[in-house]
Length: 118
Image 1 (cartoon, rainbow, N blue to C red):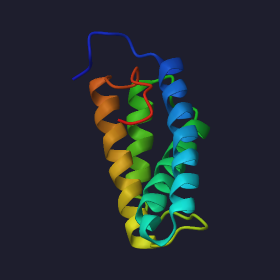
Image 2: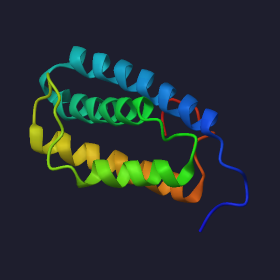
Image 3: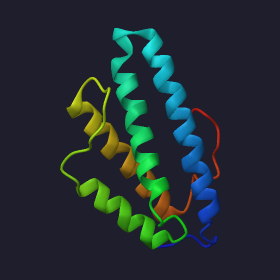
Image 4: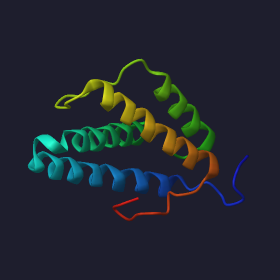
C-alpha cells in the first residue's frame, strides 16, 4: 500500500543526512557521560551506521528500491562497526532503526520530521 502523496527522494536524503548528524552529536554526548551512557552511545552509533548505509545506496529516489535495500540490510548476519561497547545490543539497535525506517518507507510518512528528538 502506497501513500497518495508522491515519493520525495530529496526529502528522504535530507532526513537521512539530518539523522546522521544528530547521531554523531548523540554519540559525543554519550561519550562525555561515560560508563552509564554506553548503551546510548551504541544506539546512536547504530543510527549513524543505518543512515550511512542508506545514504550511500542509490535507492532513495525510489520507494520500492529503498524498501528492498532495507530488507537486505535487516537480513545481514552482522554489522561491522568500531568503537562500540556491546556488539549484540548494537546489532539489535541497527535492526530496530532499519525496521523504523522500513515502516516510514512503506507508509511514506515521517521523513518531513526534522526535529532532533523523535
